[in-house]
Amino acid sequence: MRLSVVSYLNTKPFIYGLFRSPLSDQIELSLDIPSMCAQKLLRDEADLVLTPVAVIPELPEAYLVSDFCIGATGPVRTVCLFSERPIQEVRRVFLDFHSRTSVALTPILCREYWGVEPEWLPAYDGYEQHIGGDTAGLVIGDRAIGMEKRFPFTYDLGTAWKEWTGLPFVFAAWVSTRPLPADFARRFNEALADGIAQIPKLVKILPSMPGFDLEAYFQQNISYDLDEAKWQGLQHFLSWLPGRKGTLLAHGRFEPYALSNIPR
Image (cartoon, rainbow, N blue to C red; front, side, top):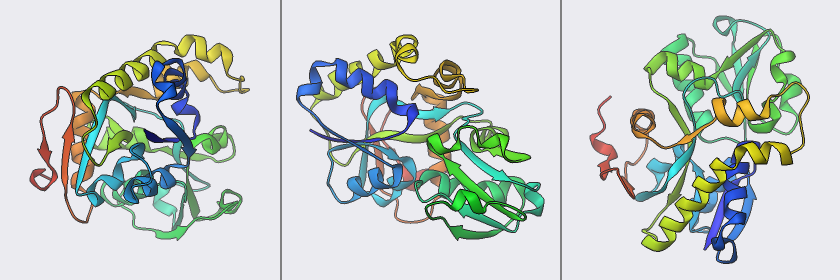
């Protein structure tokens, strides 16, 4: 089974659980940036992907394979808009090339929540060094850690989404484009659950980061359970995205849901 997983700190519990599982002998695991995970799913280069959820409308069918995700119920810490000026004074925004979901979410929040419509700039290697003046930058993943110390204004997208909608947010979910064997899905879910349960042990194994509380990040900022509230948040986010609407299906407790029927 070909798996593609985001190569960020927040996926370590998933990876740890998979390597501890008997499934480790049955999977071929690749670590990628989120946008590459999405491409592998679209190109059928992987069977199961921890994919940015913004890619879901581009799929004819998308199956949520587990009860876990990369989500947030408030501040996420590692998906932020950094600026030297208040958001109302920002004229241009770099959009992180690592991202798919956050690149889609940022314009929605700017327009609908903050009431601004800046110019969107494609990012490139080293673009973080060019954030300044009236040019802000979206930075995601491990590169965002500690950047709030460099800028007077940090806008956490998890916080902004929660304040705007009252819902948690799902940044990435385990998605396949076809049904997977039920036994594999069950054992896969068990492996992820084990990885989450091992977070206290994992924190002791991983290198410490000065000024960054890793355990709080895993336990408070990142919310891994794909519960009903996150399901609602996911549906609401997908309703804002343009493009073809396929059918979002889920194993387990959620019923099939046609994206074309999502109310705004």
